[in-house]
Image (cartoon, rainbow, N blue to C red; front, side, top):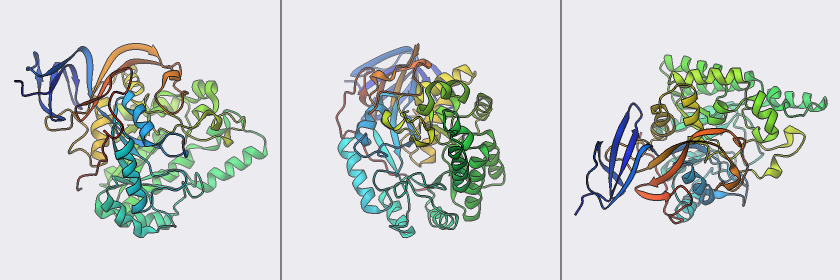
Length: 451
Protein backbone atom coordinates (compact mmCIF):
# COMPACT_ATOMS: atom_id res chain seq x y z
CA UNK A 1 0.00 0.00 0.00
CA UNK A 2 1.20 3.51 -0.82
CA UNK A 3 2.56 5.78 1.88
CA UNK A 4 0.79 8.80 0.33
CA UNK A 5 -2.84 9.84 0.10
CA UNK A 6 -2.35 11.60 -3.23
CA UNK A 7 0.28 13.16 -5.46
CA UNK A 8 0.15 16.01 -7.95
CA UNK A 9 2.55 16.56 -10.85
CA UNK A 10 3.23 19.83 -12.68
CA UNK A 11 5.39 22.95 -12.66
CA UNK A 12 5.85 23.82 -8.99
CA UNK A 13 6.19 27.52 -8.21
CA UNK A 14 8.25 28.22 -5.10
CA UNK A 15 9.17 31.66 -3.70
CA UNK A 16 12.62 31.52 -5.30
CA UNK A 17 12.51 28.91 -8.07
CA UNK A 18 10.23 26.94 -10.38
CA UNK A 19 10.55 23.15 -10.43
CA UNK A 20 9.61 22.08 -13.95
CA UNK A 21 7.81 18.72 -13.99
CA UNK A 22 7.87 18.49 -10.22
CA UNK A 23 5.62 16.56 -7.87
CA UNK A 24 4.17 16.90 -4.39
CA UNK A 25 3.06 13.99 -2.23
CA UNK A 26 0.41 14.56 0.44
CA UNK A 27 -0.28 12.58 3.59
CA UNK A 28 -2.65 13.50 6.43
CA UNK A 29 -3.20 16.99 5.07
CA UNK A 30 0.53 17.84 4.94
CA UNK A 31 3.10 17.91 2.17
CA UNK A 32 5.03 14.75 2.98
CA UNK A 33 7.55 14.65 0.11
CA UNK A 34 8.42 16.40 -3.13
CA UNK A 35 10.72 15.96 -6.08
CA UNK A 36 11.00 16.13 -9.87
CA UNK A 37 10.27 13.63 -12.59
CA UNK A 38 8.09 10.58 -12.12
CA UNK A 39 6.14 10.78 -8.83
CA UNK A 40 5.86 7.96 -6.29
CA UNK A 41 2.82 5.76 -6.01
CA UNK A 42 -0.18 7.11 -4.11
CA UNK A 43 -3.82 6.19 -3.59
CA UNK A 44 -4.81 9.05 -5.92
CA UNK A 45 -2.89 11.12 -8.45
CA UNK A 46 -3.47 14.42 -10.24
CA UNK A 47 -1.67 14.99 -13.53
CA UNK A 48 -1.22 18.74 -13.98
CA UNK A 49 1.77 18.62 -16.31
CA UNK A 50 1.92 21.82 -18.36
CA UNK A 51 0.10 23.68 -15.59
CA UNK A 52 1.33 25.69 -12.61
CA UNK A 53 1.21 24.40 -9.04
CA UNK A 54 1.31 27.29 -6.56
CA UNK A 55 0.96 27.54 -2.80
CA UNK A 56 -2.47 28.55 -1.56
CA UNK A 57 -2.94 32.31 -1.42
CA UNK A 58 -3.01 34.09 1.95
CA UNK A 59 -5.21 37.13 1.30
CA UNK A 60 -4.16 39.58 3.99
CA UNK A 61 -7.02 42.06 3.60
CA UNK A 62 -10.59 40.74 3.47
CA UNK A 63 -13.71 42.57 4.67
CA UNK A 64 -16.40 39.88 4.74
CA UNK A 65 -18.66 41.51 7.34
CA UNK A 66 -18.70 45.18 6.34
CA UNK A 67 -22.36 45.03 5.28
CA UNK A 68 -24.75 43.26 7.66
CA UNK A 69 -26.51 40.22 6.13
CA UNK A 70 -24.67 40.71 2.83
CA UNK A 71 -21.86 38.14 2.70
CA UNK A 72 -20.18 36.98 5.89
CA UNK A 73 -17.22 34.70 6.33
CA UNK A 74 -18.83 31.53 5.03
CA UNK A 75 -19.96 32.96 1.71
CA UNK A 76 -16.69 34.82 1.27
CA UNK A 77 -14.78 31.59 1.81
CA UNK A 78 -16.48 30.09 -1.25
CA UNK A 79 -15.23 32.95 -3.42
CA UNK A 80 -11.83 32.58 -1.79
CA UNK A 81 -11.53 28.93 -2.79
CA UNK A 82 -12.60 29.74 -6.35
CA UNK A 83 -9.76 32.28 -6.45
CA UNK A 84 -7.10 29.96 -5.04
CA UNK A 85 -7.20 31.64 -1.62
CA UNK A 86 -6.77 29.07 1.16
CA UNK A 87 -6.37 31.56 4.02
CA UNK A 88 -8.53 34.65 4.43
CA UNK A 89 -7.21 37.20 6.92
CA UNK A 90 -10.40 38.99 7.82
CA UNK A 91 -10.56 42.60 8.95
CA UNK A 92 -12.30 43.60 12.20
CA UNK A 93 -14.66 46.28 10.86
CA UNK A 94 -17.86 44.27 10.90
CA UNK A 95 -21.35 45.74 10.72
CA UNK A 96 -22.63 46.95 13.17
CA UNK A 97 -19.63 46.80 15.55
CA UNK A 98 -15.91 46.16 15.06
CA UNK A 99 -14.12 43.27 16.76
CA UNK A 100 -12.67 45.22 19.69
CA UNK A 101 -13.20 42.81 22.60
CA UNK A 102 -12.59 39.17 23.46
CA UNK A 103 -16.30 38.15 23.38
CA UNK A 104 -16.64 39.61 19.88
CA UNK A 105 -13.54 37.74 18.76
CA UNK A 106 -14.81 34.47 20.24
CA UNK A 107 -18.11 34.90 18.40
CA UNK A 108 -16.29 35.45 15.11
CA UNK A 109 -14.11 32.39 15.68
CA UNK A 110 -17.30 30.36 16.15
CA UNK A 111 -18.55 31.72 12.81
CA UNK A 112 -15.34 30.58 11.11
CA UNK A 113 -15.60 27.08 12.51
CA UNK A 114 -19.30 26.81 11.65
CA UNK A 115 -19.42 28.31 8.14
CA UNK A 116 -16.06 28.44 6.38
CA UNK A 117 -14.71 26.33 3.52
CA UNK A 118 -11.10 27.57 3.83
CA UNK A 119 -8.93 28.59 6.78
CA UNK A 120 -9.26 32.00 8.39
CA UNK A 121 -7.10 34.24 10.57
CA UNK A 122 -8.55 37.33 12.21
CA UNK A 123 -7.58 40.91 12.87
CA UNK A 124 -8.65 42.72 16.00
CA UNK A 125 -8.98 46.43 16.67
CA UNK A 126 -9.40 48.78 19.64
CA UNK A 127 -12.03 51.45 20.22
CA UNK A 128 -13.32 53.80 22.90
CA UNK A 129 -16.18 51.49 23.88
CA UNK A 130 -13.92 48.65 25.07
CA UNK A 131 -10.74 50.66 25.60
CA UNK A 132 -7.08 49.98 24.98
CA UNK A 133 -7.08 47.41 27.76
CA UNK A 134 -8.96 45.01 25.48
CA UNK A 135 -5.73 44.39 23.56
CA UNK A 136 -4.52 41.73 25.99
CA UNK A 137 -7.68 39.64 25.63
CA UNK A 138 -7.60 39.88 21.85
CA UNK A 139 -3.96 38.80 21.76
CA UNK A 140 -4.68 35.86 24.07
CA UNK A 141 -7.74 35.00 21.99
CA UNK A 142 -5.65 34.55 18.85
CA UNK A 143 -5.77 37.63 16.63
CA UNK A 144 -2.96 37.60 14.06
CA UNK A 145 -2.66 41.41 13.79
CA UNK A 146 -4.37 44.66 14.71
CA UNK A 147 -5.99 47.18 12.36
CA UNK A 148 -6.51 50.88 13.02
CA UNK A 149 -7.45 53.90 10.92
CA UNK A 150 -6.39 57.53 10.82
CA UNK A 151 -9.76 58.28 9.14
CA UNK A 152 -13.32 57.63 10.32
CA UNK A 153 -14.78 55.76 7.37
CA UNK A 154 -18.00 54.87 9.22
CA UNK A 155 -18.95 56.20 12.67
CA UNK A 156 -18.74 53.39 15.21
CA UNK A 157 -17.95 50.56 12.78
CA UNK A 158 -14.76 52.05 11.30
CA UNK A 159 -13.55 54.75 13.73
CA UNK A 160 -10.58 57.07 13.57
CA UNK A 161 -7.91 56.45 16.20
CA UNK A 162 -6.26 59.75 17.11
CA UNK A 163 -2.48 59.98 17.14
CA UNK A 164 -1.97 59.83 20.93
CA UNK A 165 -4.24 56.78 21.24
CA UNK A 166 -2.54 55.19 18.24
CA UNK A 167 0.80 55.65 19.98
CA UNK A 168 -0.52 53.95 23.14
CA UNK A 169 -2.04 51.10 21.14
CA UNK A 170 1.24 50.48 19.29
CA UNK A 171 3.12 50.58 22.60
CA UNK A 172 0.79 47.99 24.18
CA UNK A 173 0.89 45.65 21.17
CA UNK A 174 4.63 45.86 20.44
CA UNK A 175 5.72 43.13 22.92
CA UNK A 176 3.38 40.60 21.29
CA UNK A 177 5.21 40.85 17.96
CA UNK A 178 1.92 41.30 16.10
CA UNK A 179 1.75 43.84 13.29
CA UNK A 180 -0.16 47.10 13.70
CA UNK A 181 -1.80 47.78 10.34
CA UNK A 182 -3.24 51.23 9.70
CA UNK A 183 -5.57 52.71 7.08
CA UNK A 184 -3.41 55.62 5.91
CA UNK A 185 -5.52 58.73 5.25
CA UNK A 186 -5.39 62.24 6.73
CA UNK A 187 -8.92 63.02 7.89
CA UNK A 188 -9.08 66.82 7.95
CA UNK A 189 -7.43 67.24 4.55
CA UNK A 190 -9.79 64.68 3.04
CA UNK A 191 -12.92 66.31 4.40
CA UNK A 192 -11.86 69.81 3.34
CA UNK A 193 -11.20 68.66 -0.21
CA UNK A 194 -14.52 66.81 -0.47
CA UNK A 195 -16.45 69.80 0.94
CA UNK A 196 -14.82 72.11 -1.60
CA UNK A 197 -15.69 69.85 -4.54
CA UNK A 198 -19.25 69.22 -3.36
CA UNK A 199 -19.81 72.97 -2.94
CA UNK A 200 -18.68 73.42 -6.55
CA UNK A 201 -20.96 70.53 -7.67
CA UNK A 202 -17.82 68.77 -8.90
CA UNK A 203 -18.83 65.21 -7.99
CA UNK A 204 -18.41 63.19 -11.19
CA UNK A 205 -16.49 60.01 -11.92
CA UNK A 206 -13.04 61.62 -11.65
CA UNK A 207 -13.63 63.75 -8.54
CA UNK A 208 -12.81 61.08 -5.97
CA UNK A 209 -9.19 60.79 -7.09
CA UNK A 210 -8.76 64.55 -7.16
CA UNK A 211 -10.13 64.86 -3.62
CA UNK A 212 -7.79 62.19 -2.30
CA UNK A 213 -4.41 63.56 -3.28
CA UNK A 214 -1.18 61.58 -2.90
CA UNK A 215 -0.18 63.93 -0.07
CA UNK A 216 -3.21 62.85 1.98
CA UNK A 217 -2.01 59.26 1.76
CA UNK A 218 1.73 59.88 2.05
CA UNK A 219 1.53 62.04 5.18
CA UNK A 220 -0.49 59.34 6.94
CA UNK A 221 1.95 56.65 5.81
CA UNK A 222 4.85 58.59 7.33
CA UNK A 223 2.87 59.12 10.54
CA UNK A 224 2.31 55.36 10.89
CA UNK A 225 6.00 54.54 10.48
CA UNK A 226 7.09 57.27 12.86
CA UNK A 227 4.81 55.95 15.60
CA UNK A 228 6.24 52.51 14.92
CA UNK A 229 9.76 53.90 15.25
CA UNK A 230 8.87 55.54 18.57
CA UNK A 231 7.25 52.44 20.07
CA UNK A 232 9.22 49.60 18.48
CA UNK A 233 5.99 48.11 17.12
CA UNK A 234 5.69 46.48 13.71
CA UNK A 235 4.13 49.37 11.76
CA UNK A 236 2.29 48.41 8.58
CA UNK A 237 0.60 50.59 5.95
CA UNK A 238 -2.28 48.48 4.66
CA UNK A 239 -2.92 49.85 1.16
CA UNK A 240 -0.25 51.99 -0.45
CA UNK A 241 -1.06 53.32 -3.92
CA UNK A 242 1.88 55.70 -4.44
CA UNK A 243 5.53 55.22 -5.25
CA UNK A 244 6.33 57.79 -2.57
CA UNK A 245 4.77 55.53 0.03
CA UNK A 246 7.31 52.84 -0.83
CA UNK A 247 10.13 55.37 -0.65
CA UNK A 248 8.99 56.37 2.85
CA UNK A 249 8.83 52.74 3.97
CA UNK A 250 12.29 52.06 2.56
CA UNK A 251 13.68 55.01 4.51
CA UNK A 252 12.44 53.60 7.81
CA UNK A 253 13.63 50.10 6.92
CA UNK A 254 17.12 51.36 6.15
CA UNK A 255 17.22 52.82 9.64
CA UNK A 256 16.41 49.48 11.25
CA UNK A 257 12.72 49.90 12.00
CA UNK A 258 10.18 47.09 11.59
CA UNK A 259 8.24 48.78 8.82
CA UNK A 260 6.18 46.82 6.31
CA UNK A 261 4.07 47.80 3.32
CA UNK A 262 1.20 46.37 1.33
CA UNK A 263 -0.49 47.29 -1.90
CA UNK A 264 -3.63 45.87 -3.42
CA UNK A 265 -3.92 44.24 -6.81
CA UNK A 266 -6.31 46.90 -8.13
CA UNK A 267 -3.61 49.57 -7.74
CA UNK A 268 -1.35 47.46 -9.95
CA UNK A 269 -3.87 46.38 -12.59
CA UNK A 270 -6.33 49.28 -12.94
CA UNK A 271 -5.72 52.92 -13.83
CA UNK A 272 -7.72 56.12 -13.57
CA UNK A 273 -7.69 57.06 -17.25
CA UNK A 274 -9.05 53.75 -18.57
CA UNK A 275 -10.84 51.86 -15.82
CA UNK A 276 -12.30 54.59 -13.62
CA UNK A 277 -13.49 56.40 -16.74
CA UNK A 278 -15.16 53.17 -17.86
CA UNK A 279 -16.58 51.86 -14.58
CA UNK A 280 -17.01 55.00 -12.50
CA UNK A 281 -17.80 54.34 -8.84
CA UNK A 282 -17.29 50.59 -9.27
CA UNK A 283 -13.58 51.40 -9.11
CA UNK A 284 -14.00 53.63 -6.05
CA UNK A 285 -11.55 52.29 -3.51
CA UNK A 286 -9.58 53.97 -0.80
CA UNK A 287 -6.97 54.98 -1.76
CA UNK A 288 -8.28 55.88 -5.22
CA UNK A 289 -7.19 54.16 -8.39
CA UNK A 290 -4.22 56.26 -9.58
CA UNK A 291 -3.14 57.44 -13.05
CA UNK A 292 -1.28 54.98 -15.24
CA UNK A 293 2.05 56.74 -14.67
CA UNK A 294 1.76 56.00 -10.94
CA UNK A 295 0.71 52.40 -11.63
CA UNK A 296 3.86 51.91 -13.69
CA UNK A 297 5.97 53.22 -10.80
CA UNK A 298 4.30 50.79 -8.38
CA UNK A 299 5.39 47.91 -10.57
CA UNK A 300 9.02 48.97 -10.17
CA UNK A 301 8.68 48.41 -6.43
CA UNK A 302 7.16 44.99 -7.03
CA UNK A 303 10.00 44.12 -9.41
CA UNK A 304 12.53 45.27 -6.79
CA UNK A 305 10.88 43.01 -4.19
CA UNK A 306 10.17 45.99 -1.91
CA UNK A 307 6.53 45.14 -1.20
CA UNK A 308 5.73 43.02 1.86
CA UNK A 309 2.67 41.49 0.22
CA UNK A 310 -0.21 42.14 -2.18
CA UNK A 311 -3.85 41.75 -1.10
CA UNK A 312 -7.37 42.12 -2.49
CA UNK A 313 -9.11 44.46 0.03
CA UNK A 314 -12.22 42.43 -0.81
CA UNK A 315 -15.66 43.72 0.16
CA UNK A 316 -18.89 42.68 -1.54
CA UNK A 317 -20.94 45.86 -1.64
CA UNK A 318 -24.21 45.50 -3.48
CA UNK A 319 -24.42 47.54 -6.67
CA UNK A 320 -26.95 49.80 -4.97
CA UNK A 321 -23.94 51.13 -3.00
CA UNK A 322 -22.08 51.95 -6.23
CA UNK A 323 -24.58 53.74 -8.51
CA UNK A 324 -25.01 57.26 -7.11
CA UNK A 325 -24.05 59.95 -9.66
CA UNK A 326 -22.35 61.80 -6.78
CA UNK A 327 -19.18 59.72 -6.46
CA UNK A 328 -18.70 60.74 -2.82
CA UNK A 329 -21.99 59.06 -1.83
CA UNK A 330 -20.86 55.62 -2.99
CA UNK A 331 -19.13 53.01 -0.85
CA UNK A 332 -15.40 52.40 -1.24
CA UNK A 333 -14.16 48.94 -2.16
CA UNK A 334 -15.23 45.99 -4.25
CA UNK A 335 -15.09 42.20 -4.58
CA UNK A 336 -11.63 40.75 -5.15
CA UNK A 337 -11.12 37.28 -3.70
CA UNK A 338 -11.56 35.56 -7.08
CA UNK A 339 -9.40 38.00 -9.04
CA UNK A 340 -6.38 38.52 -6.75
CA UNK A 341 -4.37 35.52 -7.96
CA UNK A 342 -5.16 35.53 -11.71
CA UNK A 343 -4.83 39.33 -11.88
CA UNK A 344 -1.49 39.52 -10.10
CA UNK A 345 -0.12 36.55 -12.06
CA UNK A 346 -1.19 38.27 -15.28
CA UNK A 347 0.42 41.54 -14.21
CA UNK A 348 3.69 39.83 -13.41
CA UNK A 349 3.68 38.15 -16.83
CA UNK A 350 2.97 41.46 -18.54
CA UNK A 351 5.88 43.11 -16.71
CA UNK A 352 8.37 40.29 -17.28
CA UNK A 353 8.42 39.27 -13.61
CA UNK A 354 8.99 35.60 -12.80
CA UNK A 355 6.20 33.40 -11.35
CA UNK A 356 8.13 33.07 -8.08
CA UNK A 357 7.14 36.65 -7.29
CA UNK A 358 3.53 35.48 -7.11
CA UNK A 359 4.47 32.83 -4.54
CA UNK A 360 6.31 35.46 -2.51
CA UNK A 361 3.75 38.26 -2.62
CA UNK A 362 0.57 36.20 -2.29
CA UNK A 363 1.68 33.27 -0.14
CA UNK A 364 5.02 33.18 1.67
CA UNK A 365 5.26 36.84 2.64
CA UNK A 366 1.74 37.29 4.04
CA UNK A 367 2.09 33.99 5.94
CA UNK A 368 5.27 35.35 7.52
CA UNK A 369 3.71 38.75 8.19
CA UNK A 370 0.77 37.27 10.11
CA UNK A 371 2.96 34.66 11.89
CA UNK A 372 1.28 31.76 10.12
CA UNK A 373 4.43 30.53 8.36
CA UNK A 374 4.87 27.50 10.61
CA UNK A 375 2.01 25.94 8.59
CA UNK A 376 1.24 28.13 5.59
CA UNK A 377 2.79 30.01 2.72
CA UNK A 378 5.01 27.56 0.86
CA UNK A 379 4.98 24.06 -0.63
CA UNK A 380 7.81 22.87 1.61
CA UNK A 381 7.69 19.42 3.19
CA UNK A 382 5.88 19.60 6.51
CA UNK A 383 3.62 22.51 5.58
CA UNK A 384 -0.14 22.26 5.18
CA UNK A 385 -1.06 20.94 1.75
CA UNK A 386 -2.61 24.22 0.59
CA UNK A 387 -2.23 23.72 -3.14
CA UNK A 388 -3.61 25.50 -6.19
CA UNK A 389 -3.44 24.45 -9.82
CA UNK A 390 -3.39 27.26 -12.36
CA UNK A 391 -4.26 26.45 -15.96
CA UNK A 392 -2.58 28.68 -18.57
CA UNK A 393 -5.48 30.22 -20.47
CA UNK A 394 -6.30 33.62 -21.91
CA UNK A 395 -9.82 34.81 -21.15
CA UNK A 396 -11.75 37.95 -20.32
CA UNK A 397 -12.93 37.86 -16.71
CA UNK A 398 -16.72 37.56 -16.40
CA UNK A 399 -18.11 38.19 -12.91
CA UNK A 400 -21.60 36.95 -13.76
CA UNK A 401 -20.77 33.46 -12.47
CA UNK A 402 -18.85 34.65 -9.41
CA UNK A 403 -19.15 32.68 -6.17
CA UNK A 404 -19.01 35.93 -4.22
CA UNK A 405 -22.13 37.56 -2.79
CA UNK A 406 -22.22 39.91 -5.79
CA UNK A 407 -21.80 39.39 -9.52
CA UNK A 408 -19.98 42.56 -10.51
CA UNK A 409 -16.29 43.48 -10.65
CA UNK A 410 -14.08 46.37 -11.73
CA UNK A 411 -12.01 43.64 -13.43
CA UNK A 412 -14.89 42.81 -15.78
CA UNK A 413 -13.51 42.27 -19.27
CA UNK A 414 -9.87 42.33 -18.11
CA UNK A 415 -7.87 39.61 -19.86
CA UNK A 416 -6.20 37.16 -17.50
CA UNK A 417 -3.62 34.56 -18.49
CA UNK A 418 -4.34 31.83 -15.91
CA UNK A 419 -7.47 30.25 -14.51
CA UNK A 420 -7.82 28.51 -11.12
CA UNK A 421 -8.39 24.83 -11.97
CA UNK A 422 -8.41 23.39 -8.43
CA UNK A 423 -7.85 24.43 -4.82
CA UNK A 424 -6.94 22.20 -1.88
CA UNK A 425 -6.82 23.32 1.75
CA UNK A 426 -4.89 21.05 4.12
CA UNK A 427 -4.97 18.33 1.48
CA UNK A 428 -8.75 18.43 1.03
CA UNK A 429 -10.19 19.43 -2.34
CA UNK A 430 -12.29 22.57 -1.86
CA UNK A 431 -12.83 23.82 -5.43
CA UNK A 432 -12.68 21.58 -8.49
CA UNK A 433 -12.59 24.34 -11.08
CA UNK A 434 -16.38 24.56 -11.30
CA UNK A 435 -17.88 24.29 -7.84
CA UNK A 436 -17.20 24.05 -4.11
CA UNK A 437 -16.94 20.40 -3.11
CA UNK A 438 -16.17 20.46 0.63
CA UNK A 439 -18.51 21.31 3.50
CA UNK A 440 -19.18 24.39 5.58
CA UNK A 441 -17.08 24.14 8.71
CA UNK A 442 -14.18 22.34 7.02
CA UNK A 443 -12.20 25.57 7.33
CA UNK A 444 -10.30 26.25 10.54
CA UNK A 445 -9.47 29.29 12.64
CA UNK A 446 -5.73 29.97 12.60
CA UNK A 447 -3.84 31.31 15.59
CA UNK A 448 -0.46 32.95 14.99
CA UNK A 449 2.71 31.31 16.20
CA UNK A 450 4.67 33.01 18.98
CA UNK A 451 6.75 35.86 17.60
